[in-house]
Structures are given as C-alpha cells and as structure tokens.
Amino acid sequence: MQLSLFCDYRFHLKTSSFYTKYDALFLAVEAAWEKIPRPARSGRLGYGELTFLKALIYKNAQSIKSIPELLRDLESRPVLCEMIGFTPGQLPDSSRFYVFLAQTHNSEIQAIHHAAVQILIDDNIVSLDLLIADSKPVMANTKHNNPKNPNRSLDKTKKIPRNPHVTFSYYSYLKQPTSKKKNFSYFWGYRTHALISQEGIPLVEITKPNNIDDATIAKMLLKKLKRVYGQKKGRIFVADAAYDKRWLYDFLVKEMKAQPFIPINRRYKEPHELFAENGHPICAAGLKMKYNGISPKDGRNRKKFRCPIKTASKKEQAQLPEQCPVNHKHFYQDKCYGCTAYVVPDDIRAEVPRQSKFFADTYAKRTEVERYFSRMGDREVEQTTHFRYRSIRNQMTIAHLTLALTAVAAALVLKQPEKIRCFRSFADAA
Image 1 (cartoon, one colour):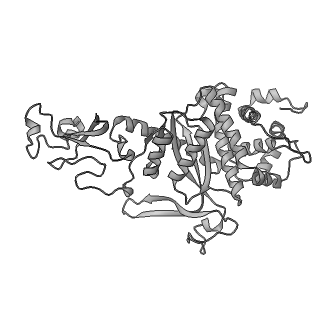
Image 2 (cartoon, rainbow, N blue to C red):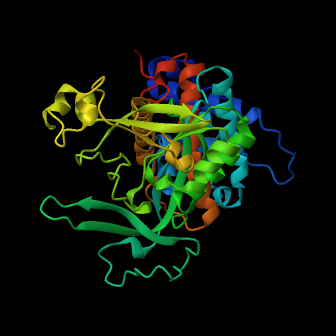
Image 3 (cartoon, helix red, strand yellow):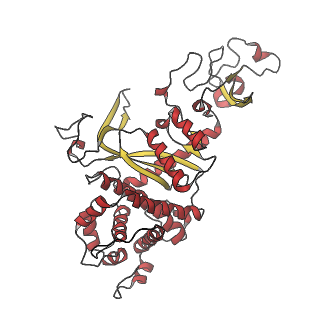
C-alpha cells in the first residue's frame, strides 16, 4: 500500500496495536483480492472497489453502525484513511458507499471470502472435516419492527413498503419461570446462514428471507461448499434439531458422503407405545432400556439396547430398582445379562447413533457456531440500516468476510494462529 511521505507509517505500527491490527487486516484482504481474476473496467477515475471494501471491513471490525458514522470516524484518523486508500480531507460522499453496496454483485464479495478461506486451508489453519450449520436473524429497517409502534403490522401476508423481500417470522421465545406459556418475539427481516469449520471460521454463507427453513438453506450451502472447496468423503455435519428433515439426511449421506449429527426434533415424530420419547425401547418392567452400541447382522446395522439395571452407572443406579420388577429370567439365569432388544432403523435418519458417547462428544462441538454468531453480534448482524436486498446481502457477506480475514491476519500476517478467533485483540502484544 502507498502512503504519504509525510506520514511515519512504521512508527504508528510499532507504537499502536490499533494500526497493527488494521494493517494486518488490509494485507489479508489484498492477498485474497489478488487471487480473484476480474475483467478490466472502464470509467472515470476515482477510488477503487478495494478501497471501499477496506473501509467497510473497518466499519464491521469497529462495530460502526452506519455509513455517516464511518465517515466521521475516518475524518478523525488520517493515518487510517491513507492505509485504506483515501486521501485525508477528501473522503468520498456517503452515497458512494451506498452505490458500492447496491451495485456490487454479491458473488464478487463471496469470491474474496472463499479465497481468504482457501489461503487458510492451504496453510493447514482450517480443516473441512467437520461442518457446523446455524443461522441468525437480521432485522429489516422498518417501523414495523418497533414494538412501541401502535400500527405495527403482524400480518405475514403483507408486503412492507421499501422492503419487498422481507418476511415475517419469530425471533426467539423465552420460557417464563412461573408459567409453561412461551412468549414469542416476532420480527420482519432476513436470516444469515453459515457453515463454519470446527476452528470457528466461516466457509460459506448466504442471507435469505427468514421464511425459508434452515434445512433447505443447508442443502444450498452444502452444494456451494462442494463446488468451491471440492468433495471429501467422511465429513461430519453438525446441526441442531431445526435441520431434522429426512430428505436432508439422504442428501448428506448419498450425495455429500457425510455423516449427519442432528438430534431428533420431537415435533416431527409421533411417540410409539413401546418406545420412550428418545427412541429407546421399553422393557417388560416398564423401564427405558439403555443403548449398548451397533450390532451388524445380515448386512444391516441394528441398534442394541440392554437392561437399564444391569448397565446403569453408579449415579443411575440410585434412580433404579436393585432387582428386576417382573423377575425376568434373563436377569437371574444363565449369564445374568439382562434383557436385550434390537431396533432395526427404517431409514438414514434412524441410523444416527444419537445414544452413543461419540454422538454426544461430536454434537457438543456445535457450540462453536454459537460463539461465532456471538462475535458477529457486535457487527450489526441483528439489524440493518439498508433497504435494498442486494445491499443487505453484501453487508452480511462483508461481516462474514471480516471474520475470515481476522483468521488470515492473525495466523499468517502476524504469525499468531492461536488468535484466529480474537477479532478484537488478535494484534495485541502477548
């Protein structure tokens, strides 16, 4: 990057972690930018696309909420202006940023994101062995999201002025300590979806209206992942119960050659009288049998369950009777092994070993995506000040790109791979 001769750039880098941080981020985005071939464009001279992209990355990294606030911040930081590529005192009008967001194709920014991730993959910083999916709401810029608005519309069939793509859905619900009633919070807007690696790095992302279910978006993201990074057999896909759809299991196993780790969504299953709610068989004594592994036979994988009294841990034994309530012969005779039951799964969804310790340990890694979206929460993810759908998609893609560039800057520019998730402090001195 070119800087003014009147600016002692190296002095600022040595004395300020703030400038060190953004120097590393801008070097990271330049490295990703150079990997993307783009045709020559004619037109009047001015600040280039990379300059505006750097400024918006800075806006996300600093949690600046609007373009006017960004310009006010840059006016007070002439050194940073030159690092970005602006001339101090000659900043572009705010409309130029809105034009950049509205006219830039989302695929162009995504290509930079994918290039940054590929840099991390090539240097063995990020692996593609485990994929974690989740989504987060993005509230539209409309008065109908104001709960104090007496004319707020809650009609999901209505089109919101200036926001033709927004849809109506629930944001979250809170369980009340004194009541079983669920209090839902509704909003107009979108959802940003992402597949992240086990290291907490976003691999692919997309922002869609929030009335599209998570499983449908997950299939789109998996296809994009395969197209961008290639196919790999044996990947593990981890997601919550919102992704519990039979057709998604078929797609994961048959087309992606992946292993799904998704818990059962109780709303999609009717309980059977011979089984507990979690799919465990009920023994003759009315006790829920305990999972005991997979038993292959005749080309089929059967789930094996045993007597809960015989297989209980010390903690579980306190909740169970000492002897079989019905005095079953298998409890006392022969090897005193207790009753055994086998369940033959009828589809891929049922074959997932949800009762195993391996499933529990693997599914526990899903918390990484919650931490990821928590980091994005400071980057204006839960609301937007824009109206055009393309602008909102570009805003969200730049937010994901900023976190991917943080990993590149920390691991490869500053040689601190242990700080790839420290989006605020990765440039601080140890």
